Structure formats: C-alpha cells, structure tokens
Amino acid sequence: MTQSTTLPLHPVRPDGLDALLAQLPAAAFVRAAGFDAKMGKIILLPPTATGPLGGALLGLGHDRSPYPFGAIATALPPETLWHLMPGDYDAEAAHLGALLGAYRYDRFKPQTHKPAELSAPIPDRAAIIARAINHARDLINTPANLLGPAELADAALALAKRCGAKAEQITGPALIAGYPALAAVGAGSDRPPHMVKLSWGQNPHAPLISLVGKGVVFDTGGYDLKPSSAMLRMKKDMGGAATMLGLAQAIMELNLAVRLELRIGCVENSVSGHAMRPLDVLNTRAGLTVEVGNTDAEGRLVLADLLSDAVAAQPDWLIDFATLTGAARTALGPDLPALFCNDDVLATQLLTASHQVSDPLWRLPLWQDYAPWLDSPIADLNSVSGKPHAGAIIAALFLNRFVPASTRWAHIDTYAWNESNRPGRPEGGEAIGLRAALAAIENLISVTH
Picture 1 (tube, rainbow, N blue to C red):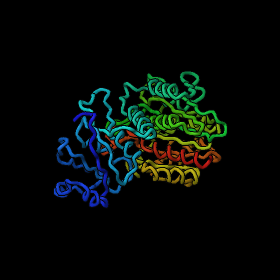
Picture 2 (cartoon, rainbow, N blue to C red):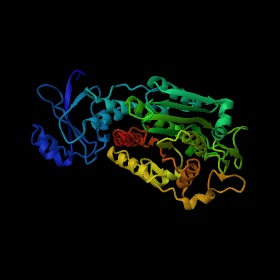
Picture 3 (tube, one colour):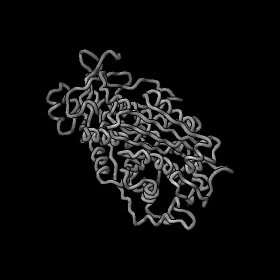
Picture 4 (cartoon, rainbow, N blue to C red):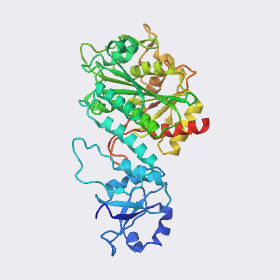
C-alpha cells in the first residue's frame, strides 16, 4: 500500500450500523466478526479486486469527542492513507482526533513506521489546535534535565517570536524584587527561576484575556520531600504553563479578536542550603506575607505573584492552569480538571464550552467558610491548612486572596497527564482543558461582537 492510494474509512455509530451494512458488499463478513461499532473498535474489510484491503469500519460508539478517531493511528496498518466516508460525525473533530492520536514523543526513540493517517485537506482549525496541544505535550514530556526554568522560558520566547507577540523575561535581582514568592520557590535550585510575560493583540476594544501558568519544571517537594513514588512524574509539574503556552499559541494562530497576556513562572523546587524552609515567612508581590506551612505547596506561591501582576491590567477574564493539588485528583481523578471560579457567569461559560467540545471541567466551590483555615499567627496567611480536609479548595482559597472580587477569575487544577494509552490520548503529557478554555474564549468573542 502506498501513500498515494487512499482507502475508504467508514465511521459508524451503533444505531447506524445496520444502515451502513446494507450498503456494503462485506456486510456478512462484518456481522460474522461481531463488530458492534463501539468506540475505538476497528475492523478491516476483506480484499477487493483493486487492492489487498477493502477499507475499514471505525466504531464511534456514542462518543461525540474527537477521541474515537485517534484509533486511526494506532489500530489501522502503518504507512496507509485513508479518506473519510460520509457518516454521523464532525469532519473537523475527526481530523483533530486523528492528529492527536498520531502524536508520539519520539525525541529519543524515533518511530520505526509512519502511522496511518487521514488524507488531506486537513481543516485549518483542526491542524492549529492539534499543533497547540502537541506542543504542550512535547514540553510536558521533556525530561527535567533538558527542560529547566531557562529552557521553559526560552520556549515562551520562541512562541512569542513565531506569533509576533511582545515578550518580557525577568530573572535575577529584578525577579527577587518584583516576584519574591516565586523567587523563593526557586531559591534552592542551581537553575535560577524566570518569569516570562507575552502580550499580543492591538485592538483596544477587544476583550483582554489574561492567562497564567504554573511552570515548576521539577518538584522535589523541597524540605518537605516527596516520597519517590510521588516524585516520579514531577517533570509534569510545569503542565499548567505548558497548557497555557499551547492555548496562547492556538489563540494567536487562529487570530482571535482578543488582546492576550500570558504569564508563566519557570522555576524548580529543589533542596539545598538556599531553599525555603517550613515556617519561613515570605513576602509576595501583593504585599501580603505568607508563612510557609509546607514547602511542597510551592505552586500556589508561584501563582500568587503572577496573579497579582495580572490583575493590575484589569483583564476581562483571568484564567490560571496549574498541576496544583493531589486532592483534586483524589476527588475527580486524572481526566477531570477541577474548576474554581469567583464569577458564576464565567464558570457557566467555561463549563458550557467544555461540554461543547468534549473537554470536561468540573466545578468545585470556593467555600469561604474554610478561609480561616489559612490563618497564621505570625503572617497575613499560611500557605496551607493544618486540617487534613479539602486540599484543593484550600489551595484555591489561597489564590483567591490575590485576586480582587472585581476581576473575573477562573482557576483550573489539572493533572496534565494521560495514565495510559487510549484513542486520541497517548500515555504521557496532556493539555487537559485547553480546548475547553479556547472554546469559552471564542464564545466570549461571539457575544462581544
């Protein structure tokens, strides 16, 4: 089979299987094989007079997401090219799912065979979103010895150059003076921390969207050292920054009618004689003092300074992404990011968009009755609660102290990782929630124009 020859691929749902089989010469073969059109199932059709394959059927089940089409790359023969036959599906979602399913992090172990793929033309939007997600995946999957704070900052600067955005990078004494909590998190590492800000869009009448991402390139936990099992995947602790870089890339390549600001804190949480200690008191950009209740609660310190910086520009929406708490994963598992929001309209828009594009978010409350749990006897607040409950809520309430009520703000606590290989979602780094946030921003634009 050559790449110049395309084969027919019939996407089908269980309730449309009988009608499709009524039109196929190989119907008896498909029925005898027990094909039921469940999500991700594929059956190859027998040879025809024109070639060794008669095509294939791809089961979509009842899933309306792009992910069933991810099976194209993993379940169809390599080095083959396919064209989609008519069916009950969205063509853009189909191409997006195929592109996401074909992703592999092959920097150190190149693929031996080119996976099966769909023939052109690929819808522009699908290609742009896939590139953005796969860029975020690449960053998350890169080992921490090769992606330090400087390299993550460089990735942001390179994105700005590619997309025509303005970029500002701060490190050294200026970072310590302007972002003291962020600097304290990175003080224990030989690789100094950086803050990078990107600005894009010139129309003063367009809504201002401010994005913030946690970019902890590796998290040992600091003096409150993580056990080895919990440290194993900590190269992904910059998943919030990677997701925000991917989202910003998609916004700029789609040329959305917004003004965009992006801030990422690029830092490593290490152990050394310079590292912050439990019960240290830190200054923050907002002027609040924070007692360090646990050095492993470092991400919220990074975000506190970035959020304080972002609110000064009075954005229409302020959205942060962070791999912030294990408590969110305990509550919702790896696939459902926890959404915290101080504005019901913004929360509804994000949740509605997440449903539209099958990139789910789940709202948890900013339960103010728990806010006193962050009280400290010697500082304005503690970084953690002394109680063993509601860890994700407590982290969100901490961040809430750095965002005024007048700023519409959403905090998304994400896992940024696929635990196993599934159609469209290969094991490894993942930009969970990116498509939901992108769709919400596009919906905002449609309302404001």
